[in-house]
Image (tube, rainbow, N blue to C red; front, side, top):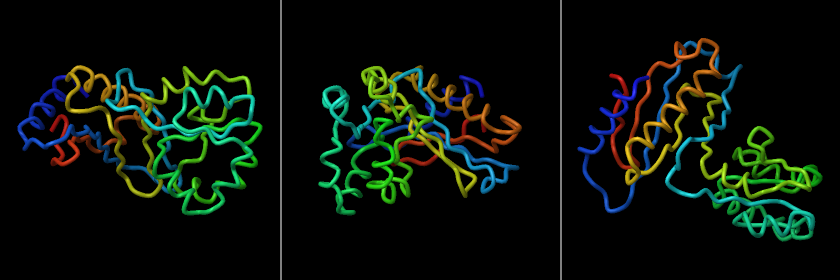
Length: 214
């Protein structure tokens, strides 16, 4: 993938009808020659530049991390408050409202027992690969900063996936850097690297996809 090809796609997207809100750039991958059901993809990528919008983070903690969680996360749920979220509707609202969930490692068994059925089916359980399961002595400030630039690529059944790589009001160079970083990270996860990528497209929230390098 070349920078010039991405710039060409960006220029073409800018010719599409304008909207009354700032749209998001979504990067779309179509894969090939993979047994995806046997080898699902679940990849977190930290972008070099901003994704244009801060993510919302909730944390399951006890007293050791409560103060930090209240400072650096959008919601801190203490162990003593788990019972307040026993209702499945409240848990579904949590899953819809927050992008990422963190958990103090000592609480993971209780988090799994209390929230696993709802968060797990939505892929929102605190994830060690993301750094979302933390020790009681963790520093949450740098983790939160990293999460604001982190996107997820996931494919378990279908051969396509997508993630956001920024907003249309960001400089083109930032979007290009983010796209290259995601493409590189995905290729490294595939058995035959770029040979397993059929094509890549970029789209705005309300726009039509434009193939990169077509």
